[in-house]
Image (cartoon, rainbow, N blue to C red):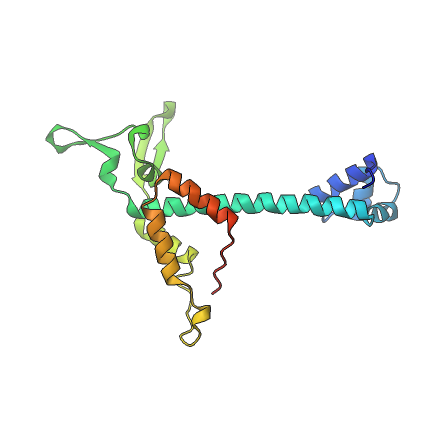
Amino acid sequence: MEKLTEKQRDLIEAYLSNPDSTLAVLAKASGYKSAAAAKNALALPKVIDIIDQRRSTQIAIAQKKTDVEAANMIRTWVAAMEFDPLEAFDVLEGGKLKLKPLDEMPDNVRRAMIVEVGENLTVKSVRFADRMNASIQLAKYFHMFDERPEDDEDKAAPSGIVQTLMEQIRFASNEELDKFDKILNAIEVKISG
């Protein structure tokens, strides 16, 4: 493949940073004398190939970020549903409770906590996530509230698969959850409602 000129590289960068720009703006940003010259450069096969490659990379990065964010949301919702609040406290004499240091709490308890920090980074208040809201969010995420046609089982949400996933996520260790994240990244599962 032929090497790109500096103007072509600048044009590609300008186009990828704002694909909705006019040709005149792209021409000015990349040193072309006219919008027509920028248009001709964008039509070159080597420029098209580079733009397509870069777009594919950008899409893959965005998808990976979305997958990681979704996995973290699911972990947090499951933690909010399943945690035992007593695991966040030490029981003192007389039955009084003292909040444990965060590094001594199980991960699922920390995920279910909402900590308000005051001055000098001291804990001002601690609340726990709303279990009912977490249940609803998980159900929505897995399309459990979608209408299910009774006469067409192929279009119904696979509640057995969802239940199995929930059980596996609920009792998984952090290492298992990391493996699960890798599997999700490797396999595209599409549930159509």
